[in-house]
Image 1 (cartoon, rainbow, N blue to C red):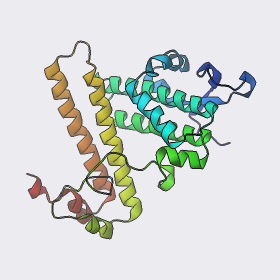
Image 2: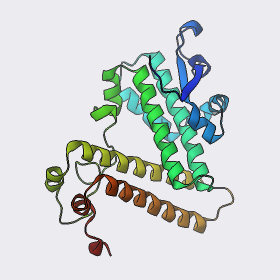
Image 3: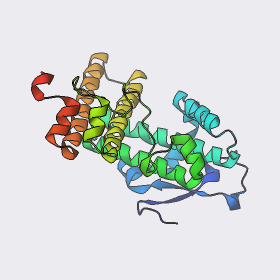
Image 4: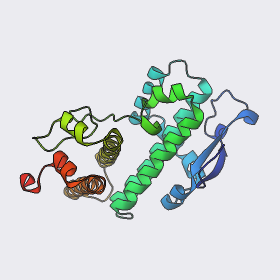
Length: 251
């Protein structure tokens, strides 16, 4: 089974999932993204120690309810692995958010680390679940990526900011793969912003509310700028203006 070189930490899952029915000899292994956890300044042991506090997290509870809904007959061992992957992901995502909010990493590093984490999360599920189970959990999509889940007011997965452009016009000018790539990038950035907002809602020690508000506005502007820069790179001027409008129209 081929693995990317950065996935080098082999940890027995029974350390994480004490409730699993499998014997220790039969327990599979969890492979952490080495480069990411090094950048975050954490170890596999740190992830283990922080598992429990995320088991009652509202996001985790909603995720596991979704798992039960879409894969009602899931094997108990697989379910335990899915739960452990999610709590691990939440812990690492909080570390990424904290580093960004404190200024220890810039927006580029924040985006790269978030993408690395999501890739690990998806790849790990592909190793654990059957294709049918994976599609049920994330939704069938091109290249094994989940379909957009954040509403945008249309079926594309990203908003059309030019009032003179329709969905049909976008489909005529952009091929399906380009639409998918833009939607994926947009969805990831919106989710990043929501994750940061949730972090701020719990309060940041030593940071005043006015500063938090200013930081959120700055982060939102940076994410929007990153999204537009990405679109600039893969679209022609005509295609870009179809989505965002002419510069004069945005003043």
